[in-house]
Image (tube, rainbow, N blue to C red; front, side, top):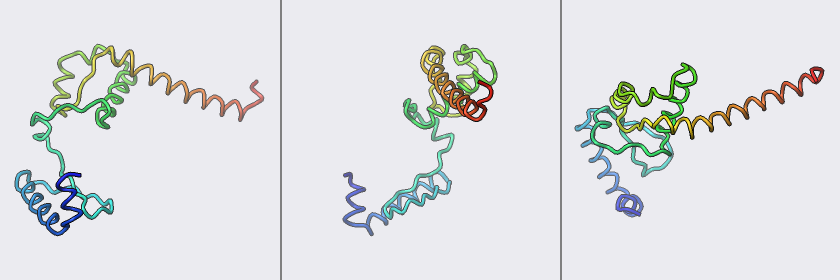
Length: 145
């Protein structure tokens, strides 16, 4: 347990006072309202909205298990498939620059990562869905056999 957790448990009023002071300081720095989160925890600290400046302030990249990185990788795979694009597109400097402007913490993976790891996973998922759909149709239409 860290100091904040200890204060929250043992001296809740002092914890709330410090939390309010921090909130006011952050509001002055960012000029943004804070996101409200209703999870029922009285000691829950709320997170503020992330700005583009926050993204470019030298923060580290997302790791592979981060939700945003996973969604980005899936979006890139959808881009390849839906627009019939070559996997070489991810190695172009234009795409990389665009992603760095959008969110510098996103990592544009190498084309071989998409070819060897992401594509087979997507293929397996689509194949399972197709088999499931075909099984339902075969059961519903036995006269086709």
